[in-house]
Length: 388
Ligand SMILES: [Zn+2]
Ligand SMILES: [Zn+2]
Image (cartoon, rainbow, N blue to C red; front, side, top):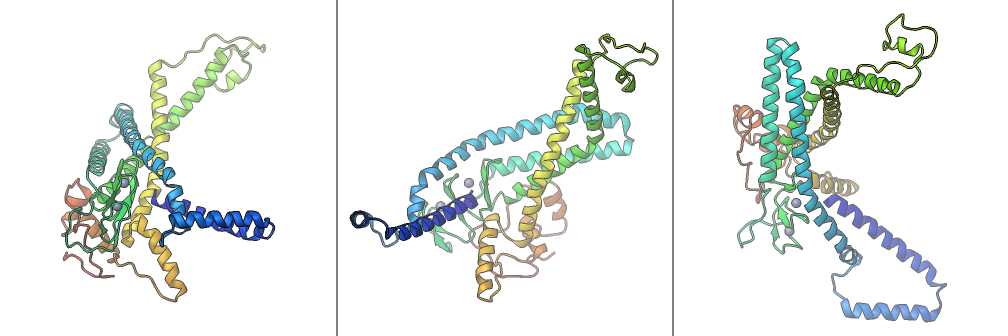
């Protein structure tokens, strides 16, 4: 959302500059009286609203404030719809997995494979439900409103309160968020310091779950697709299309039934309602899980790269700008929150000892993240953040 706003503001600023340039060029052609009138009105407007901080950026922000307000409010209300959509779609896939996929696994696989499918599938389900619930219900964290000794790097223009490092204002939540990553409409919540881990674990477990359904249900999908195609071809012929040699070729007519002349075939046996629903459900599950696995998989990989670098999505934008700015001066930008790849992951998951990789990463865990989100250790490339 922040990124969209910045891009929109930059585009508007560019447009304003272009418009000014055009005005300057055409000024020589405008009659003197009109020019005087324009100058007079400009002076009048400035004398009424002049402020030492007024510039084109501020004017553009003020003019488009209603648009931003509308977008923020629509996103806030759409958040509820999106959360319902996630719950409904996940439940539908779960029903199909239990009623279509699981009976097939139990019927055809060996006991060892059945055990693996049961254990993995249920672990994956628990991780998805737990992390999604925690990500939506856990507050990302906001700076205190009361006066305190918290170190601040700036003041929020909207909340008029000091902002600690890595804190940003969210227009949709209408508050400052500690270590803000982005506002997620699928969670109807901001992703910040206290729920960043739940968000990432949800994305990862959902991607794994979709991949699991997609890979396990691939053969079922191919069978269901072929069955539906076959059923469609039968339906076409049932409507009275003359059947010639083609019927023999695709195996609809028994051999020896051809007399060399076209005739109308008797109604072929069709699928029952239950069979049709079964095939359609399998196709729906495979298409949905494969699409989500691709889209969410890309997002998860992107977030994994950011976590490895010790950045949030917002910091990626600001840091890349800062890198380019310093590069022009011949200097190198170093992210103060990057403690080394492994340490970044340990801090992110809250791993303090070896057993935590199992209890805090592989199993559902409700532990609080490292630090309070208000103060940060500015030691770049610090080794051994935690004794392991
Ligand atoms: Zn704020
Ligand atoms: Zn938000």
